[in-house]
Length: 328
Image 1 (cartoon, rainbow, N blue to C red):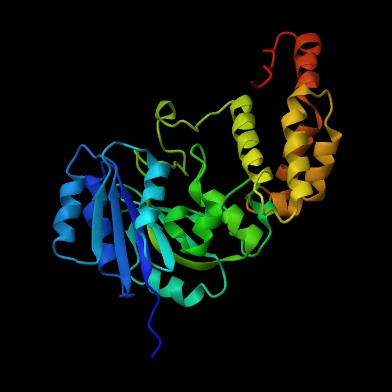
Image 2: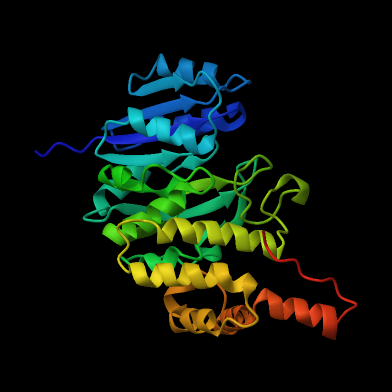
C-alpha cells in the first residue's frame, strides 16, 4: 500500500488566544493522519504560546517555535515554511475552524496542480454563519492563466494546499503584499491551480481580522477601507510591478506593457492604449470580479482618461469641484 504523503500545516500565531483552541481542535482531529502541525508564534503578549505548549505536550505531531522578536505576518509565514518537511503544505490562520476532512479531500484532489483551494463559509466571533461564502464574493478560477490574478484574487491562504516545489519559485514573499495572491500568480505561470466547491473552512471575520470581506470593521481601524483613487492606484501599480518583474512570466510582453501603460496613466490626458488593452483581455482580467458586464465596461472606460484630463476638467470645466491630485 502506497504511503500517504506528509502534509505540513503552517500555523502562524500572534495574540490569538481567544480562538486558538477551537482551531487547534479542528487540526488535531483531521481525518488525514499523516500530518505535522508547525506553529510559529510571533511574540504574542497573551497566553497564545502557553496554549500551543499545552497542546504540543499531548500531540507529538504539533511542533512549536517562538520568534525572539516580532517579525510580522508575512515574515512569520516564511519562517514557518522553513520548518515544514511535508511535500504538501497547508496554510492555517489562528482563528478559523477547519472541516475535519479538509486535508483528506484536498490531498485526494490536488493531482498535478500546484495549488488546490476550496470555498469557505464566513462566520462571526460567536461561530455563527454570516450567510456568505467566498464564492458569493468572487468567481473562483481554475487553470493556468496568470492574467486572471493581475487585478483580482480569489485564492485565500487558509484554503490552499500547495506542493512544496512552489515555495522555491514564489520566495521571497513580497513584504507589502499578500503571499496567497502572489503564490496563485506564480503557480499559474509555471503550472495549474484548481479548487473544490465544498466549504471546508469556517472563515472567521472579526475586528482583528487581517481581511474585512464584508466591510464590517470600523473604517478607522481598517487600512484598506474607503481608499482614495490615488491609494488604489499606488497599491495596484506596486502589485503590477511585482508581476511584471517575475522572471518566469508566460506572457512577459503583455504584463510589462500593461504595467507601463498603467503607471503612465497619471501623466496622460488620454490613455486609449490602456483602455484598448484591458478591453481586449477583459474576460480574463476581470474573470474573478463579480461585476456584471455593464459594470466592467463602465470601470475600464474610466481608464481612457488620464489624470491630466481629469485635472483639467475639475479646474477649468467644473472649478467648484475638488481638484484631483496626481498619485505620488
